[in-house]
Amino acid sequence: MTDNGTIIRNANAMMNIESDVADIKQKVIEISQKLDELLSERETISIMKLSEHSLYTFLDDEPDIYTLSDVRVVYQ
Image 1 (cartoon, rainbow, N blue to C red):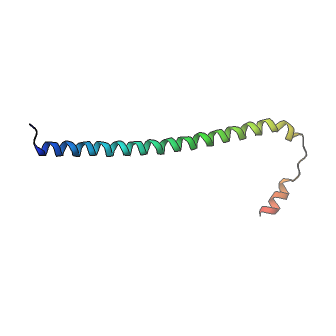
Image 2 (tube, helix red, strand yellow):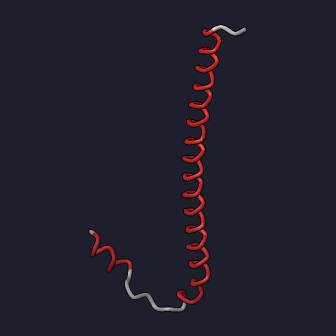
Image 3 (cartoon, rainbow, N blue to C red):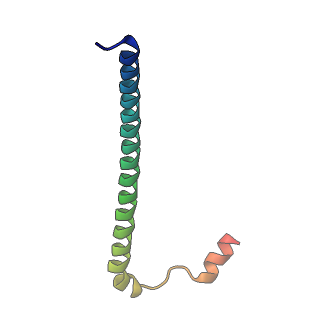
């Protein structure tokens, strides 16, 4: 037969395990969200690089609207 002390200790241990599992689940959710953000940023950067590469030939043949000295005057 089990005594009350053993039952209480087992119940406390189960509550601790449940609490730990809940904490782990929350951390996994946070990590997953951060990973999704990083992947989204990486996709955006990749698309921007692809756009830049694709438009390079087209834009290279176009005349410059502003010169470097024009830009310097505005931002000084």
